[in-house]
Length: 230
Image 1 (spheres, rainbow, N blue to C red):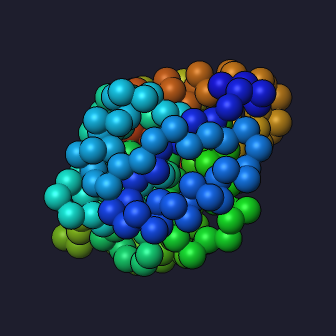
Image 2: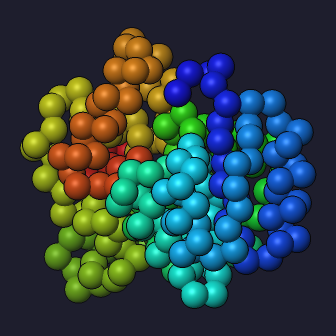
C-alpha cells in the first residue's frame, strides 16, 4: 500500500453505539474509509471475505465467535490486518490476541489520534501495542524462568512457539530485522537503521515470519525477546 491510497476499515463490535462512535471518529481522518461493520466475529469474517478491508478493528470480547477466534481465522486467510481493541489489558486477552496473529492491540480508552495513527501503521505493515500492553509483555519476559524450568510451559510464556524458534533458518540480515522487531521498531525505522528501502524490510519480515511459522510481527517481536535478540 502506498501512502496515497485510502485505508479501508471494517468495524467489529457487539455494541452498535461503539461502532457508531468509531465510525464518526474515523470519518474525520484523512485517507481512512469505513467500508463495513459487524456485530460479532462470525459476521466479521464474512464481511472480511466480501469486502477485503485493509484493517479490521476487532473487539476482543463478543458473544458467539469472539474477537480472538475471528482474528485467528482472518490471519489464517491472510485477508486483512487486525487491530484488536478491548476495554481491559488482561493478560489472557493480550496473549490470546498476539497468539492469534493480531497486528496490534489497543485499549478502547486510547486517544483518537493514537487510534488513527495505529490504523495507519498497521495498514503499512507495522505493529502497534498500547503502552499498557507493552508493560504487560515486559513484565512477563522479566518473570519468565530460563528454558528448562517447569514454569516455562506457562501458556502466556509460549506465544506461537516463540521460545522454541530455530533461528538458524534465518539469513544474517533476517536476524538483524528480527532483532529490530524485538526492539519495537517500525518498518521505516528498520529501513533507516539498515540503510535499505521499506519494501526490502517488508520482504525480510515476510520471509522470516514464514520461516519461523509466525503469524505477525508482534509474534516475531516476542520471538526476538524470547531468544535474546532484544
